[in-house]
Image 1 (cartoon, rainbow over the protein chains, first blue to last red):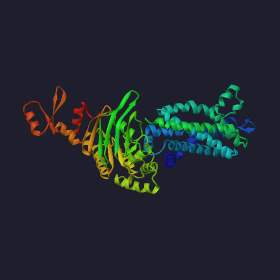
Image 2: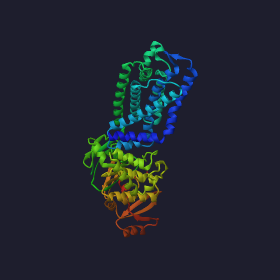
Image 3: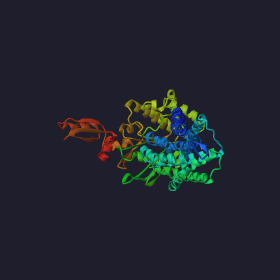
Image 4: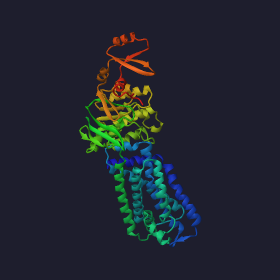
Amino acid sequence: MSGMLAIYYREILILRKKLFRQLASMSVSPLLYLVAFGLGMGRDVRVGGHAYLEFLIPGLVAMSSMVQAFAIASEINIARFYWHIFEEFQAAPIRNIAYVTGEVLAGVTRALISTAIILIIGLFSGVTLAYNFHFWLAVLLNSFLFASLAVGLAMLVKSHSDQALLSNFFITPMAFLGGTFFPVDKMPDWARTLLHFLPLTHASSAIRAAAFDEPVDPFSYLLLAGLGVALFVLAFQCVNRARE
Amino acid sequence: MIRIENLTKKYNRTEALKGVSLDVPAGELFAYLGPNGSGKTTTIKILTGLAVPTSGEAWLHGYHVGRQSIEAKRQCGVVPQNINLDQELSVYENLDLHGKLFQMSKRERAGKIAELLEYTDATDRQDSPVKHLSGGLRRRIMIARALMHSPKILFLDEPTAGLDPAIRRRIWSLVKKIQQGGATIFLTTHYIEEAEFLADRVAFLDEGKIVALDTPQTLMERLGAWALDRIENGAMQTRYFRDRDEANRHIGGHDESFSVRRVNLEDVFISFTGKKVQP
């Protein structure tokens, strides 16, 4: 427990040192999407009985929490490849599970901060949604899943540039295709089937349903939780492999 | 205190360690010498849990480094070759984080940080971000950090690499002070004079194998007390003599120019391996 808290403390300390830069960086993309798609293109568009802006905000929450949870991988890699701080953690009497949990928690914290930023931006845009238990549960599961994926991949890559490559191949396509900007149900059958394999599709759908105070498909929660646990276990295995 | 039995390590097809065995008793300052790539850092990485041996076993203060890794890690402090302080954090925060990683209470951490900053003469820099510190001070802070949890064994991997001679000597004094405090010190270096000045015993490592192990004095006495260097066909040739008179008598019979000096550990290493220690 104390080992996990030490790892988490370090990540939060780093986050606090760069807080303004981090907050600004977390705000830029959602703001741009909101202006371009929400205010520009979608002012008069309605999706499933909701204004497009209302449709967009939960999608942005899903996307942003995914991106920020996954961004913990960059912090780990900077610490590992440039500053060699991973060696300090490896030489400390803490178990790998404590290391993984601390890093995943840090990823989830980043995701929650980015979610709060979007909700504040949404509030200023005049969008009020239901931010109930189901909404936060979906955000947490989504963040947990992608933070676990980030820790595992960060242990497998051999350089920081490999990490960027993984983001380009997995995270960026998912951000655009996972039901963030458009309803997946409107896609052709083959595309819809394909997109249902993306965890972000389920996260977007759960977060959106909860935000509209509609019933959430329990399968979405189950899938996010199941995949999250599997990736967490994988991350734990990967820390062992990171040793020489 | 440190026990290594037949340790080997392979990286793909490269054999970094080829059956290293040694014992370092408590309180000893043991120097592990060899050129770059000889396996010094690999040995430290295995002992401190950063690498897994291909075969062989090791114990730190009686704890097996593989099977009892958490307990073994508690026994040792590590000062790695690379500066691995958190650059964004202050000196105090770096030490505090280390204390947290070793499950020290808040009170224990605060007390130990104050003590170590004074010990390493860095009290006035406790709030400075590490990225603003000089190379020498960073090294001292790394040593302070490794001592935070009062380890019984301290691993110093090239602790003075890249530092100027004055700062190097300051680090030596600090290392001596730590040993006098009762710690066992395992030092790797390719600065031969560092080992000569500090070590109780030295081991020479070459291509993953220990080629000599004894006290510096005994190793040097095996060659003689005096060395006589001369350039022959563009290459340095060295001969060793028991005393200076013997060396002088040898010079008397030749016309070339000679240089007479005391035998040092580098002579020992060259005589064993035919190589220089420095890269």
